[in-house]
Length: 209
Image (cartoon, rainbow, N blue to C red; front, side, top):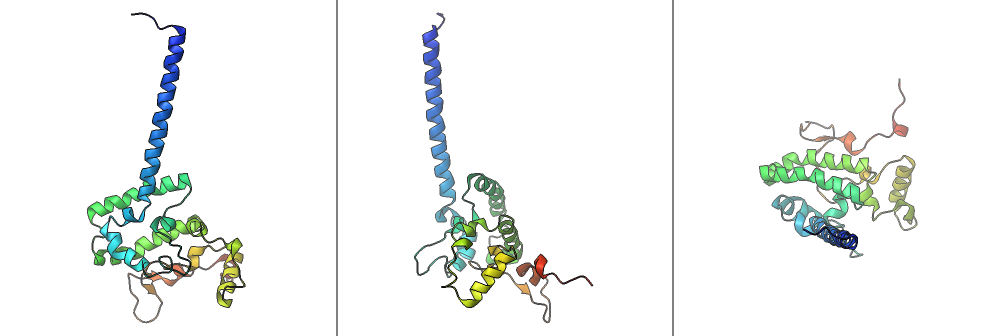
């Protein structure tokens, strides 16, 4: 068998690099298309757990229908837009597929029983990333306080001053809140302590006795 000439080897390397480049572009295109599809509303509603529970609640909120006609779909609130955080979120979401197979929340009764735990996981995630998904659309630096109500203006300015983030106050804005223990009468053992909804900031903690 003849030994390839120097020019032949160069040609082979060039063709190999070109093929690898084309395959790489094709892989990225397919990967990006698949990733975008998993962020679509149709993909989320593929699971009846979502379609029959939280989606119906979301349809009654301002994020679904509003005067501006801008709709926030599931991924806008639950999936980061930045690439690495998005990939990490997708990896963690694989656990949700496993629980769908197990049927952990496949009935309204099971879903409601699990709701407090699921809600707190999501609030903790948004607290940790400074409500990044909210801030993709709502930028506090762009607030026009002249068109906000008196109460909203005061609360937003107070929250910014105390280093709070959107989810500290805006829980339940798109989905039904789980039961909250108000400390009045009989206590529901499945309810969430009220401190979880209104966390005490460092500035507001009572002085030690």
